[in-house]
Image (cartoon, rainbow, N blue to C red):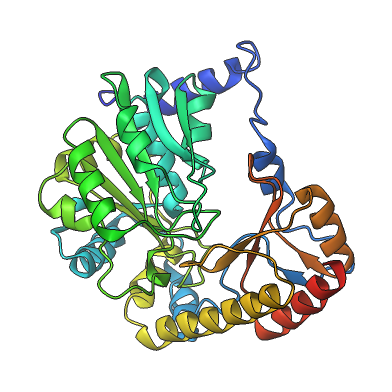
Length: 376
């Protein structure tokens, strides 16, 4: 795969995609794909969009100015501007630029890692439920996803002990989403570090840190610290959450240079020039960064206070959403909350009597509060 040119790869991928129906693989691999198609088409009467973990306060004014200021250059290809953002991200993470790959959202990083590491030919170990983008992609091309049920503790934590036990010679990658989506919980710092360090000696560990900015535990470690030690670890980060740039699509991977080169060889394209300029400025805008964290904390407080009143249990969240137990089928909850003007998260099997709700603006939180009180 890594010896193919991009043009050859695209041709091959096109043939493969065209062959999927013949292989019995549907383009609609799950309810997740259907969910994506209708994500931004809210039903009439719905005013509080709290189903996709977006940051409604972004992007910042400085980022908006950077985007509009870059329009005169959208007639040019973006490749010459990649290096500047790459250097700035590298400085933020404390690594050299050859440890960084900019991607079209962190989701592209997840998917092209699947291609680069040949996950379609082997096994991926992951918790369940967790963020499935990489897993669905590998599975659609024939990979085997070894799903480990999450623990039934207060955080619905990933079962790291069982995940480690399941590693074999056929395991191509172990996927860890921390904070986890959809639960919002984090793993104990020392246990996570020990797990990643140990397992990375047997196979690649992928640490999805899309929500890492929201972690409130002092000194909580990013697994970038293991990348710096040369471990077999890949970390993904995104500008979609705390920076409020989900619609612009830019994220990045952090890994050893040899791993980055391997993944870059199958990358489809680079972020566009507007996204690059937005990310470049966003990294400097600490005022907006702190504002996003502050407003998210206020939103979570309001959600949790309402859930406490209703005596509905929830996972302590280190993200921009809260996962709570409804005691009812999620399909019913989605319908009933929609009738109250609120769009909440999709089903997350096997926890189909739980609901994920995102934080939003304060007016959204008021609509949510009224809706929860009415429904529950």
